[in-house]
Amino acid sequence: MSTKTYSSLKTLVQDKLDLRDEDFIDDAEMLLYVEEAVRFCEAEIHKLNIEDQYFVSHAPLRVRSGFSDVDLPTNIYANKILRVVYSNGSTTRDIPRMRSLTRYSDAEATRKDAPATPGAYSYMLVNNSRSSGTRLRLFPTPNETSTFATLSSEFAATAGSEVITVTTPASWTVGHFVTSATFPAGTRVSHVSGSTVTLSNKALATVAAGTVELTSDLFQVWFIRDAEVPATDEDVIDFPEFWSFIGQHVVVNCLKKELGNPRLGIEVETLRELKEQMLSTLSNMVPDQDDTIQPDVGHYQDMGGF
Image (cartoon, rainbow, N blue to C red; front, side, top):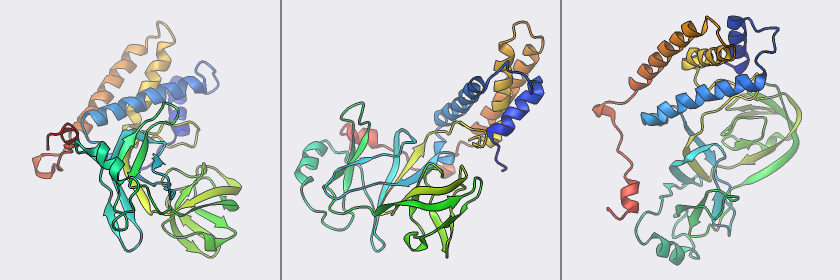
């Protein structure tokens, strides 16, 4: 499926309403209307419990030896963690969430112990204050550190390309996560050939000399991410299959500013039809009984049901 950018959506709306040389709708207003439509799509996807078909993402956890609390990805949706995984190259295992009635005393009892085997951790979510936000707390306290290093002025990138040029290729390792404002979250190193490095995602901007953080995947979290709302012309619309609905939502809201516009009724009806098509498409994606995954009954366990 082809991607659609905010720039192309904006052009669609401007052409349809003949707003190319007008300031009747500014960028801030148009972005607000796009966000409303994107959030509506996001809400319907969560309502139907098919977020795993749209928003599954993963990222490294920056774990430091001697520190229990770990920051969650900034784009996680409602702290929805699917899985936490430990992998050191020879051992791979899930890190389970602590759910039993005695989890608080169990956590305190194991906090100072060393893991019995590599990766033998468990976790719970804590939120000590609004300023700190929700964090993942590991038990026992980790005695190992995710490998991460900040490289200054080490890469040059071109917007829209996944290939970058680096000056110290020995520092770049296939599989490592790349953290930088130049690349989308979850970007990884796919290939290294001399001074040319290929990434798993395309650069968001052109950079002549950038700073990047490389993080190993010793600890990883799989989670449900937020829908992405565009902020610049180059940003991709998160739901290309519902491109028409999002564009029509913007068209209708623009027309609402002009009282008495005779086109409004027709465009509202078109929006209603596109909305019904979108909801029908999403409903048809709900799995039947033959491919339903095992439900998450963690909330029952939290209440002592198991």
